[in-house]
Every structure is written in C-alpha cells, then in structure tokens.
Image (cartoon, rainbow over all chains, first blue to last red; front, side, top):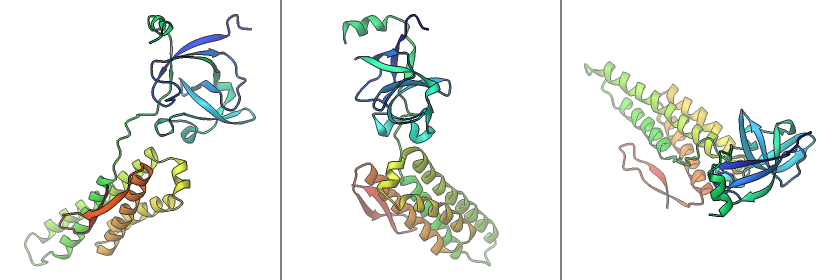
Length: 94
Length: 159
C-alpha cells in the first residue's frame, strides 16, 4: 500500500488543449481504476502520456486527446492496457 | 499565472506528454500534384523523341529515370498525408478515401511501368481528387486552376 497515493505532473504538448495547455500541472490519484471521460496518465513506449478515456472494455482503454487534430493516441497505437495506467487526474492546476 | 503554478515551476516535476509525434501540421498535396504532372510531361517528352537523334538513348534514359522518380514521389507524398495527417474519422467522412489512396498507389506504379500518357493522366486525376479531400478536411474549399506547366492540365488549390 502506498503511503501517499498522489503525484504531480507537468503537461507538455498540445494534444489536450483546450483542457490542458503546455506548462499546466495535474495532480494524479495513483490508481488503475478509471472510467469513461477520465483524464489518465499512462505509460506508452517508456513515456508517460496524458489523454482522455473514451471507451473502456474490460482491462482495455481507448484513449483520445482532446485536441484531436494534434494528438497521437489510440487512433494510432490502439488499446492501452490498464496495467499501464499510472493514475487519474483529480486536479488541474492551470 | 497562479501562485501555485509559479511555485511549482521552481520545483523539479516530471513531465507527462500530451503530444503528437511532431505537431508540425505542415502538409500540402501540392507536391504530389507536381510529381504527377512531371510524369505526364515525361510521357509527352518520350513520345516526342526523335529515334534517329544521336542522343536519343541518352534523353530517353533521362526521361524514364525522371518518370520513375516522380511516379514514386507522388505515391510517397500521398502516403505521408494519408498516414500522418488523415485520421480514421476522415475515412468515415469520405468513404472513397481509403480506396482512392489504394488506387493512387496502383496508378503511380502503373504510370511508371509504361510510357502510356493515359496512365499518367489517371494518376494525376486521382491525386487531384485526393488534394480536394485533403483541403475539405482542413475546412477549405478548392478550385482548379491552370497548372501553367508544359504538361497542361490543372492544379487543385485551396481558395
């Protein structure tokens, strides 16, 4: 069990505009329990990415950036396993 | 900027990526059209060659080489726009898109395989249609303007 199940991240890139802009911060609840519409941070190819969950099927998530025309997401790399999920955004610091 | 953010900026916080591979967004089907026009032009030049000319072989070789290169270039340019810029929802929006790109790949090869001008014109027509779809996706209407190239024909450009 984690003593402090939260983590702060700084946002880089444009794929989550207008929800999150480059340089904004997000506070994460470290959990793998996410639902449709949640902003999630997950590991993809040794990099932590932030996207929005648009579909949940069992242990698989379909994630899409809010700024669809400038986002590399499940439309390219397919489903994300919940094993890869770091946590869910509970606070946006803009 | 909020006080909290100012404070956080002074701390070393790991970054999370909300990125696209390269968010350059710089795509234009112009180059694909120019390449297709070049293929048309090469077929014209090949047809106009004088077989008795001393540099016939030399010129023919050059025209064929250029035709090969630009037939492939047209395919490459279309493939990059289709693969990098276009998204599954665009294929839904334009049901002809996937088949059209497939046809361009075939037409590009077809235009390389022979010096049949009709094949080159077929490639050009398909690339022009692709250009129209591209600009429609970007919310721009298009028009066809004279190419002003010796190959004649038109270019699809945004209005």
